[in-house]
Length: 268
Image (cartoon, rainbow, N blue to C red; front, side, top):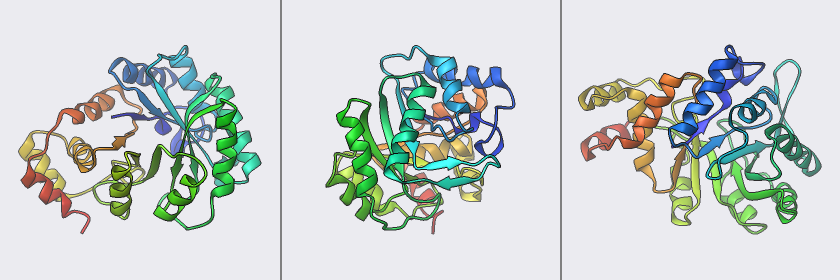
């Protein structure tokens, strides 16, 4: 169970946080609670979230893995604009290095698809750009975001891939096959928006199962994901310490087989 830092910025991940001190407190509480995987990007804010992470956590604990993303730019009006030219990916990577205050990035995901859609566009040039930076010691590991199985195979022909980060949750399961593919290859599947993102999960079945188990619906949704695959890694986000603790507690929630069967039917 990791932590997704996107919500630390203002509305729609743009601008400063509503409460700066609370944002710092959430980051510190996550690490103090044992979180070793924080997901971020320099286009959250932009730069706001990475600078908050640096302020709250630097010097970083040795065991902490900070994963970031490249592939988009933020416009002054808050729009997200895809930016996948290999040279700009490198520039974005340097922005992340500078704002996080590190000499090398633990994991860099190249974001090639949209939030809910993927396209089989060639990605070898983009992955090659990151691989060159890895050879220089500026990146330790490379991942992909918003990709298909075909794009994963193309990327693997260039360099080892350690993580795939796609939209995936209890209700959005278009990538069921991909989850199984990466599990078989011991690649992490990092499901973003595990609780629905900007449109939170709503399901009477989920609420009923949660009531029977004495848990919150969000905890059940996270527990279902953790039981879905042995290589599943979650990055639920929040700007609240109390909500953070609720999310982390889901890692200890074991769902009985009948509950899993009911939850499996939600996507249908």
